[in-house]
Amino acid sequence: MPQTTALIKQAANQCQSRGVRFTPIRRKVLELIAHSGGGLKAYDLLDQLSTEHAAARPPTVYRALDFLIEQGLVHRIESQNAYVACACPEHTHGFQLLICRVCGYVEELHLDDIGSQLATKAADKGFQVERQTIELQGLCARCQSAAE
Image (cartoon, one colour):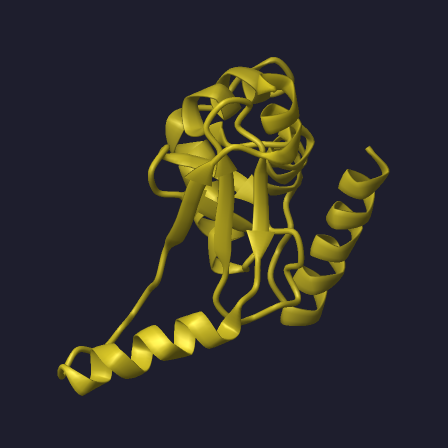
């Protein structure tokens, strides 16, 4: 939980410095995602959010998610249609996600050279990259140990 508190504080500071509003709903959505430890789907967020905000509806959640993604505070796990808190939102470069297929643990990597290599290769082919999603699925160390 202390990591979640630090992440929320950093997000609030980042939003303030950018002049964007970090509303209570946006804050709560980020808290729920950060506290989950793995990927969280939008409707799971809605279920949890509606316990405190009875008026919460799908557009509320999706608008909050769009904002958090735009600010670099949350990443979308494309393969699972789920969301995970960005481990270091101050990092503005590409990222890669390690996703455990057993427990759902997600870890963020920042291997910038991979992103630039892909963009260079794409440009060589006349293709302009607008967005990259690199997800590596497998077993985390804990699940590997449990399987032995």
